[in-house]
Amino acid sequence: MIVIMVPNASTHEISDVITRIRAAGYDVHLSEGGASTIIGITGVGSPLNRERIGQMAGVQSVMPVSHPYKVTSRAYHPDDTHIPLGTITVGTADLAIIAGPCSVEGRESIIEIAHAVREAGANALRGGAFKPRTSPYSFQGLGEEGLRYLAEAREQTGLPVVTEVMDSAMVPVVCAYADVLQIGARNMQNYALLHAVGESQHPVLLKRGISSTIEELLMAAEYILSHGNRRVMLCERGIRTYETATRNTFDINAIPVLKQTSHLPVIADPSHGTGKWEYVESVSMAAIAAGADGLILEVHQDPEHAASDGRQSLKPERFAALVTKLRQLAPVVDRRLIFQPPG
Ligand code: PEP
Ligand code: MN
Image (cartoon, rainbow, N blue to C red; front, side, top):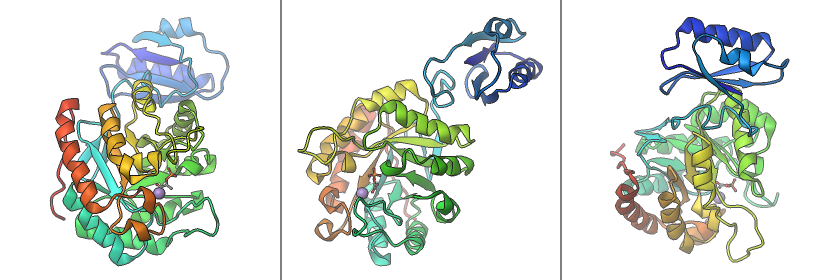
């Protein structure tokens, strides 16, 4: 249930409503960004009399929320959530272009790619230091050493760093180096991890699980938001279907569905969504046309020898060509691409 207050409700009226809800045992989430204050009610408590609350001073209306996610829903927070990322603000007209290798492979290589993607127009750097690999025999990442190289690449280029955290115990160490915590597809329903990043104030890039529904993605986001961290970006990265021509099936539908049902920014990952670099440009353009707030793309200077995901990685010059196309597309869909000034 959500309670919508009249636009000029007094702080006294708002606090009376909150006191009544809390007295019944529920948690309260306040949304104050828009024209009027909205009070979200979550948790388990004794039955609330909707009509009585509707009659309280300053209350405009009381709405049942039929879907299971509350704080994540647009009903609760009608305005788009804005998340600062370096020189841009995700969720506004600014397009987020996050680019870099699948894995951090070494100091020189990550610094070289960081400079290349920044020069091509990226506004954030990606790269996994902790890698969730399907096989225990595949490259598992450089760990904290990789985080140090990412931080050095940020220092040299000014690009904020997006990197994966795989385990709740590792949240503090990843927070010490990263600007955005990535939750990978394989961990979308790791509730201890969602809880831990929910208690940090670092922005989170939450990837859709390999076989998860849109509602399950929104419920995973709800874990993070309900623990106090509202800076969540949702990421469509393709789902498993019967199709084998591509690594995953990029669910373009998810973009308008997520934008309609939630206030959180949506980032598209055409690299994992297709698994083949030659399809990445088309799907990137489609995702932005469909309303995505940005892209996360794998870029590698030598994809044939990449430690992971080389097959889907763009060479820097192809990435640069894609950014040029995105720059032409952006104004058609009321977006803009901000060039990162030299760092
Ligand atoms: C990645 O971003 O390299 C990654 C492992 O992605 P996903 O979790 O979507 O498979
Ligand atoms: Mn990858």
